[in-house]
Image 1 (cartoon, rainbow, N blue to C red):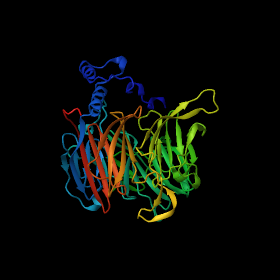
Image 2: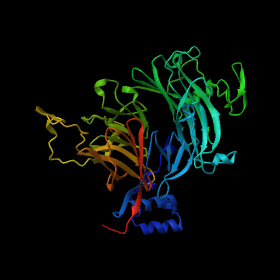
Image 3: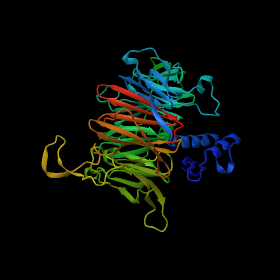
Image 4: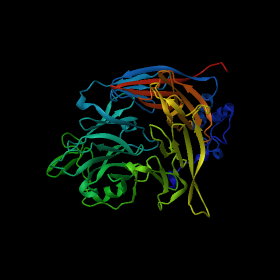
Length: 518
């Protein structure tokens, strides 16, 4: 497991040079081996320091509205079900391509961006092209050139089940396409709930297609997923079981199938990946494979992370909702201070997850505070590990304001006083926290309701210390009843809003430096 860890010392801001001129000179003369510097890291250091200067502002430079979902992936904004693409690099977004309109039955359902690995020989020149891997409504898997929209490769998955969702098994290496859940009884597959089609991406090649059969995994199966080489199966009583997908594929593959080659399968012969033959379900189980790990948890909420490996669950009891336990995967032992129960009184539940920066930390996100926690190994103690607080980010609230009120929202006075919610709209409330990996920043959105609309500001915090470095006020209102997504990518801030009746908006802000030092 050790190779999965990243060396935080090499990118920590605590010991880096604060002078931009020195950083710029280092960039010119090259890296210093002892400092573990790279030119890219130095460039990001410089950008971060410029970004956090007082005279650096963020200005809204572009907006666009749509009746279909809007997606952002690595410098590209997608509209019209991924059929129209804009590059967000530059002063303003610029259209890269727009595909011909297609009928609803052929639209792209889901997609994700694949970036070519460096230094690896690939069989065809087109394999080096950054591409969008997309699944269509009529079960075609497409590889689309990210900058031109040209279809580079297409694979037909088959007609035995509708495939809709695409996700990484191992980022930029192996992807998983998941079918919709079967709700009605079928004569051909009466117990198969899901199918998973697994592919390697460079070049695009088939690993296999796995079925999740209730006869094998249990009649109470409710959901399943594949991630990091692990098959995760969820059960209705609140039970999560983990299996090795690699072992299942190795031992239960009925026949090796190669895209573009002829295959005979159950009395039919065709070309793998061509219409109408598609791709056979070539990984089938007759009995349940060995269980690697299982744990009971409320609503099947289960997360793994940290080093050594720990997991976060809510005990499988309704009264425990809102309580999180942090335990070791080695022996299920609870970490010291490993029960997180903030007793928040809010409409939206608090959220806890492992920090995406591979620092073995944990982010506990609540309406009025964000706690960044750390797992610490103990010696000569009854506990093996302890959960400690790295830092806490608090919402700005007036301590003099009485949290107990005597008026309802309509203005009617009530005799009995009651407490305000922690996410009451008339006080500053955290709505989201995002990690910007290249700049080592935590991006926090805070919203306050003023009169009839919500006003939001985006705060940039140091990922190592939690110190606030910059505050950016959004020009558009932030309606707390709508769905929002916020992306911060180097010098670009993107706010995507979903309003009722399939109305979507995208707002783009760009960093601008002025000569005014005020």
